[in-house]
Length: 279
Image 1: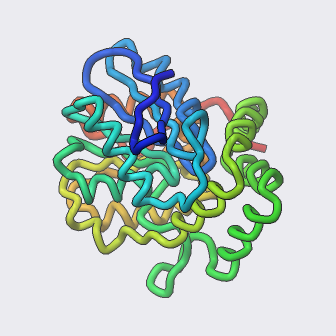
Image 2: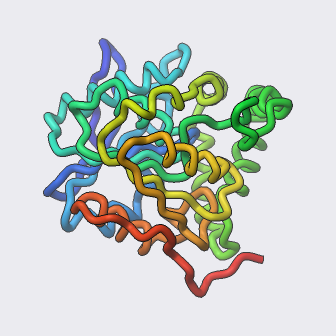
């Protein structure tokens, strides 16, 4: 594990494996770089795979403060600049995809292509977008993180999975989530709620691949469709036997689609019918 000082006395942790075109992987809320373990295993023989623990997550430093998207974007830029990366494929899952959209909008010169998975420009419903988490449930989610962090993390990760044969992986994700202090969880979740990237998507003119689990219960797939509509150069791929973690549940197809994006090919609009079923 490597460390990078992003401001005096504050370090974020990252892993840098493989060689070739760089892929920077950004995890979701209450996650860590460890969630990308299968992607590193499969892709590092051909690509440079860089996984990061966002500030407050994993083994990165967790100083007291407000954990918002501006902070995450600054830290991510410090990593990309600090490693002198070019031709970057930026990959973000869930909140990490939301952050990656903001990063690509603010630092277009740093990123050649963007992949968001289980994510979108906004998380909850609005008068002009009747999908996502209903407004009357948003404060309840924030309060749940504040008042019952452990139970909330366990419940959210249970809803990440569509397949029923991955209970041990679900348990692993919960353990990763429990490394995140409550104050980090609350403030970063508030930022997830507050940020609406829709007005900025038309200005993001790099290629963007949108990956969505057909059965995602966390981030409504219709936000993926909205992103596809608003982004000038976007593709949309559904993974048919996946929920919120298509990179786990349809690993082979998801990884192959990522390679297609990196190599300039268009992924198919639907992938991943497999032998696994959900109860």
